Length: 279
Image (cartoon, rainbow, N blue to C red; front, top):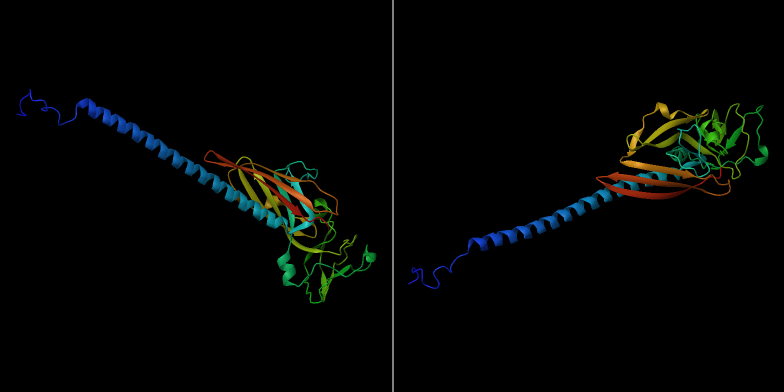
């Protein structure tokens, strides 16, 4: 009978302790391998997500910068390392870029075409008679107080106001600039209405690229130090703006090298932006 210890199958219906230990060990190894595989998959997903977030945030900031630079007053640009005390125009990198913006909304609302009918021969206009510009659009309705940029050839002209003029009187599409002297004519008889300037500067202590907006008047660009600088992009560990000022007959190129890091992930972006520089 089976209860007899001498019966051949008396102990063949179960597992030995060694067999159970081996099964548990094998399952543990399989479980550990599976856990490592899953953790690596989640880590890869987390890293990919962090890189994607950095890429999208950096791309959005550069697209915004590009859009604003396309609306820049010709030549009204400064790449700087000393907050505007000097400008790099030979391709030397800087961690801040400053530029003046054309007020296209204002020009569109007033039907201003941005071209004038006065001939080149009328420049320079003598201080003895009020200098005027007449917009080329017959339905133009300029208003007093407008700030006009005329034949701007560099950041110094723009920031110090030597080529900025304030409208003091209007008559139809004609704008009068008081006793100010219009010294030179634009080769394309162009003028631009302006009201603000933008600064994008990287703070290496906070790794934030900040954006500030200040006003523009007949005397030039107001100080950026007196306005609030809002974060445009965070987690920036390095950024360089490059601008090599070309001749007035060609467009300029602004290059941006941007490096961001988050959660041990690093993304580097490069952008080249064409800007008009013919005044």
